[in-house]
Image (cartoon, rainbow, N blue to C red; front, side):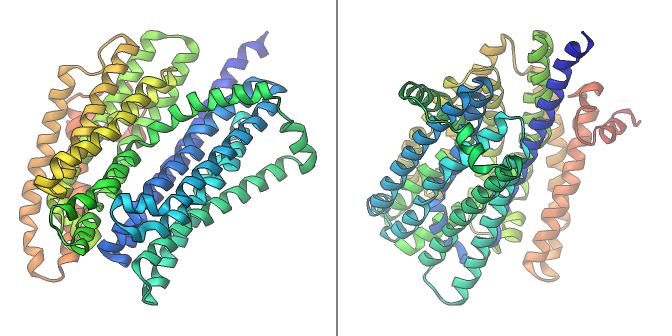
Amino acid sequence: MKETAMEPVKQAKNLFKGAFILAAAAMATKLLSAGYRIPFQNIAGDIGFYIYQQVYPFYGIAMALATTGFPVVLSKLYAERGERGGRLLAASYIILQLFGLFCFGVLYLGSEFIANLMGDPGLSLLIKVISVVFVLFPPISVLRGYFQGKGDMVPTAASQIGEQVIRVATILAVAVLFTSQGFSLYYVGAGAMLGSITGGIFSLCLLALFFRKRNQDLLGAVSGRLKTPRLKEIKHAGNILGLQGLAICTTSLLMVFIQLGDALNLYSLLVGNGTAPETAKEMKGVFDRGQPLIQLGLAAASAISLSVVPLIASSRLTRDKAFLAQKIRLAMQVTAVMGAGAAAGLWMIARPANIMLFENAKGTAVLTVLSLAIFFASLISAAASILQGRGVLLKPAAAIVLGFPLKYFLNLALVPKFGTLGAAWATVITLCGIAIAAVLLLKSSMGGRVFIWGFFKKTGIALAAMLIFLKFFLAGTDFLYGMGGERSAAAIQAVGSSVFGAFIYAWAIVRSGVFRAEDLALFPFGSKLLLMLHKR
C-alpha cells in the first residue's frame, strides 16, 4: 500500500528531472545558436551575414522538427502503446523519412526557383546544401522520441548540445578558412551551411552510441523494438504526426517564420525600390544583426520562467485548478517581467551593444525597434508552451502560422516607404498581434485573467527606474569614446549598463512587490532576491 502511494511521487520526481534536463539542453542550444552569429558576422561581414541568414530559416524548420515537434509525439506513442509502440515507432520512421526525402527533393530541385524568388540566384548553392538536413532529421527524431518515451532524457539532451557544438565549430572554422583563402562569400555561406550537416551526423552517431550502450544486442534491440508496422498503424501514426507533431513544432518556429518572411521579400523589395543590389545585401545583413540579440533576449526571458513549469505539471497531476491557475499566472508574469526588462534594456543600449558586437553603429535605429520584439515573442513562447501542456495545440499553432503571411504583407506595405525600419516595425506589429491572440487563448483556457492592472503598474515603475538610471549612466560614460577605441568604450557602456541596469530593475521589481516572497523562493538565486525584499 505504501509502495503504491509513493508511485505518483516517484513519477512526479522523474517528470521534473526529465523536464529540467531537456530545459537545460534547450537553453544551451539557444545560447549556442544565437551566440555564434556574432563572430560569424565579424568574420564574413554584413553581406556574408545576409547570405547566411537568407537560407537559415530552412535549417530552423528542420531543427524544430527534429527537436521539439516529432520527438515529443513519438515519445508518447512509444510510452503509451506498450508492445504496439514499437510498430508505431517504425511506422513513424517510414512516414518521417518519406516526408524528409520530399522536403529534400523540393529544396534541392527547386533551389534555383527559391533563390530567384528571393531575388538572389547566388543563394541556390546554399539551399542545395541545407536540403540534406531534411534527410537526417527523421532518424534523429525517432531515436530521440524512443529515448524520451522510455523516460531517458540524457541521450536527447546530449545529442542536442553535441549537434550545436559541432555545427558552430564547423561554421566558424569554415568561415575563417574560406575568407582567408579569398573565396566568394556565397561559398563561405555554403560552407557555413555544411555545419548543419556535420552537426546532424554527429547527433545521429551519438544517439546510435547511446542506443548501443543501452542495448548490448543492437540488431536484436532494433528488430525487437522497431517491429514491422501494419498499414493501419502507418495511417494512425501519420494522423498523429501530422496533427500533433506539426502543431507542437510551430511554437519554436515563431521567429523562423518571421525570418522567412524577411528572407523571401525584404531584399527584393529594397532592390525594387531603387537600392543597388550590393547595398541592399548589406542593408539586409545589418538588419539581420537583430536576430541573435532577439534570441539571446528570449533565452534570458525564458530562463527563470522555466523554473515554474514543473509546478504547473505537478498541479495537473493533483488536479488542483486554483493552484494551477496561480502558477500559470506566475509563469506569465515572470515572462512578462523578464521580457520587458530585456526589451527596454536593449532599447536603451542598442548603440553601444551594436558597436561592441558588430564593430559599428550601422542599423542602430532598426535594432532599437527590433528590441521590442523580445517582449512580445517571450509572451507568445510562454503562452503557447502552457497551452500545449494543457492539451490546447491547434489554436496557438494557427495563431503563429498566420503570423507568417501577416509579416510578409506588412513588409510589402512598409518596406517601400521606410526601408529596413519598415521591416522592423512589421516584425513588431506581427508579434504584437500573435501575443494578444496567445494571451486571450490562455485566458479562455484557464477561465480567468492572466494579468492584472496592479502588475503592469508596478512593472512600469521598475522599468522607469531602470531606464532613468541607464540614461544617466550612458550620458556619464560617453567621455570614454574620446579616450581610446570606439569598440572598447562601447563594450564598457554595454556591459556596465547590462549589469547595473539588471540590478536596478531586479531591486525595483522585488521592492515594489510584483512577486510574493513564496514566489521569489522558487526562482534561481531566490535567496538573494529575498534579501532585497527584506532589506530596509
